[in-house]
Length: 228
Image (cartoon, rainbow, N blue to C red; front, side):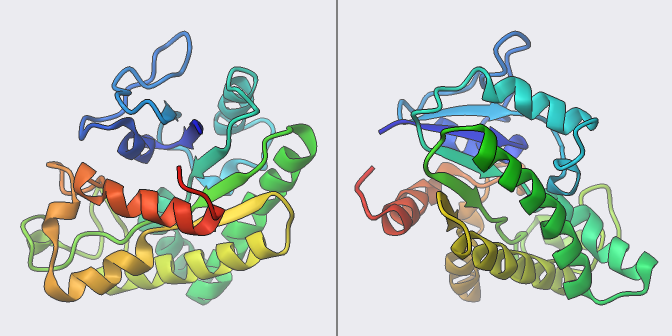
């Protein structure tokens, strides 16, 4: 079984290396791919919030890739991590609304795009991969954790809570639709974080490292009911 993986730079997790994912300018395929089970396609820092907008570059890029991938392969979509880490806390504050309100609004847009994808492709299953938590405070990267930086907006607890809400709502939406499967390492990692496991992050302290790959395979085996 071979998977197509489309999304932001976090698709590189399935490439078999800890290198930053770099898409080929002609094919979109990650030039760093080394894992024969996964073909990864990094689209840049696009938000799931914008994918329902047919005029948005992220949507146009996705439609381009959709025409290139083998639609007989299962498709993993990796979106939402940037929404949670950079935007949803700020959006909730700007709207003077709750975090759950901002999350529902974001996922509403995302699912409009997913409903379009279900209708206009023959991919089955479509796996929506939920975001993972940021590194635990007190580790090297998080010693400088502030309310706002170039990598996040929100306190550590706020971002973790946003991701918790996002994953729960996304899982619920997947249950309501055929051909959709939800997967994430969020819950597994939060359990491990009680004992601090920085080895699960790549050298940039941001993306996941290959140390976490066996757990991703286990997650896919569980949600798909097959051995990949």
